[in-house]
Length: 171
Image (tube, rainbow, N blue to C red; front, side, top):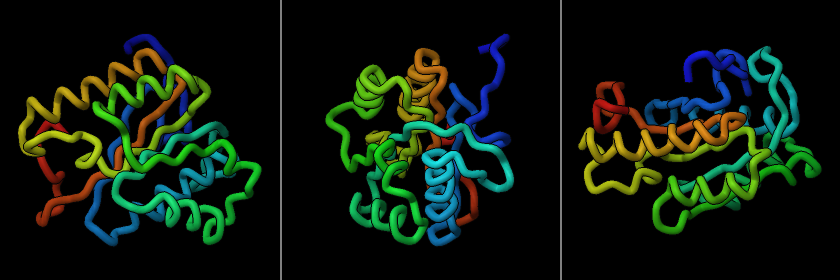
């Protein structure tokens, strides 16, 4: 919204009330970068030499197993168990993903960051190349953030073979 001040979760990267898209080829480091950002939000530690707003986090992990993600955060990234208690990790969403997210945030308004891995799995559309289908999902997601202005969303997405966004131009 115009006239509101941007409140960074991670300055220059994740801003409350906004959707950020992180895309790249498979194996390019999206998961490692994302998990480090997750760890920083949960602990309040710096991320890429930037001060981070510490807070609760929801990770919607639709492409990897929850146990692998949890193990990576706890063991490889040394996430302290006390901070891990602020992490909600889910691997499926019933029905409409955006509506499930809206319901979650209504019960957990202190959530500072929602990570969605991946956009393609979350959208649940017949054709990822259809601008109107994908655009509706993204607009509904932005509408949720108009209500939950203290929350940022990080969407993980894959690149196409030429390095651009996979799917609709609206992405």
